[in-house]
Amino acid sequence: MTLYIKNARFIDWQNLTFTNTDIQVSEGKDGGIKLIDSIPIFPSDPAKVVDAKGKFVTRSFGCGHHHIYSTLARGMPAPAKTPENFIEILKYVWWHLDKNLDLEMIKASALASALYCAKNGVTFVIDHHASPFNIEGSLFTIKEAFDSIGLSHLLCYEISDRDGEKIRDKGLAETKNYLKAGNQGHVGLHASFTVGNTCLEKAITLARDYNTGIHIHVAEDMSDQDHCQQNHNKRVVQRLYDAGGLDLKGSVFAHCIHLDKNEKTILRESKVWVAQNVESNLNNNVGLADVANYGDRIMLGTDGMHSDMFRSAKATFYQGLGTEGISFPGIYERFRNIHRFIKENGFQGDNENNLVILDYNAPTIMNQDNFLGHFVYGIDSSHAESVISSGRLIVEDKKLVTGNEEDILRFAREMGNKLWKKLK
Image (cartoon, rainbow, N blue to C red; front, side, top):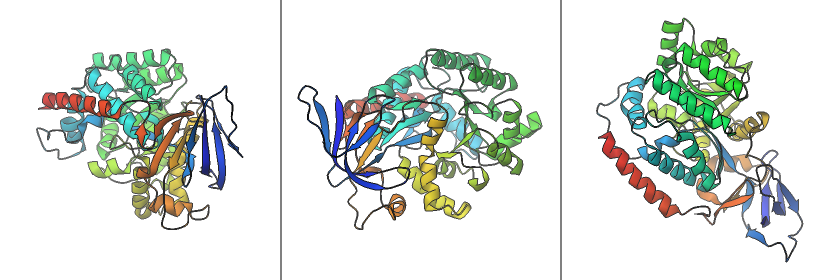
């Protein structure tokens, strides 16, 4: 079925021009849009028409680093010990949680996260998953959930040595099976301090075999650098560079907080993209990076804190005022850089037929000249009224079209209770 949007005030996401127009939206991963003068009537070809009168239409959004496995953590029981540093946060909170996930919980997490992404205007998700005692089938479970909601995605499993060689090899096998089945994805790694040389070598070889990149946490905390220098006599980015991890297609390095001048130079001269996750960094008290010298391949993520890219952009802007003197155009570019990442690396699911209709009734005029001021101080995810993913309407009038919201959240609560009992 052809989709049309009438009475749109279309905002070109790249040059920010405003056009009053009707829009024809073609369906599919390779579909696009056409700005038209009026909507044609074809009696033999029924069309879905969405009226955007008084509203704005623009490109939808993407998340550069998510952890859907943390969806059921909201309100979870307190850890057995109050963490005193980043390693203890991992040990007593996140590693305790991911060890207790089963495939039903993973499915619930993925469905709920996809629901929140969709309603926030996010149609493409780069996810980094962990469930060390339920690895087999985990990526396929997430894919099925995301596909059912209508989101495009780039998935990976975070392989590491923290639970032993057997579980490491299961992570490698799940990744290989997922990529071999023709799915686009990364080869995921947790972080340098949990990844031995054999693990790193196998992961990079696997990434080369399937023409993709690695997705890894890099120097999120200074402990990652300390471990690398003590065990490998080099810093993290240098270690990954020496192993061949920086010349792969579409690698994503998350966080990259504690880098020295040489590491920043290596990043700038590589093909790697950095995923910035300010709120998570503040929450874990690991520090804030001045990324002004990291190059122009920086995109925004949530690190599983939520599924709201407007929220991430605003937090990054306010933090960036103090650390790098970020500008309105600078934060908007970083917010939109995920489209460039996807296009440059040949991934699918983020064409122009991914749109969001914003019901933003501002108290002042919004136009090309002042849009960025509204982007930072006005528009937020609550204004996302309808969302189109790969030419398909997935949210209409703030309601999910591709699934039953209440059923999804009921299932998530059921699985959350099950998980929390295990955590206690």
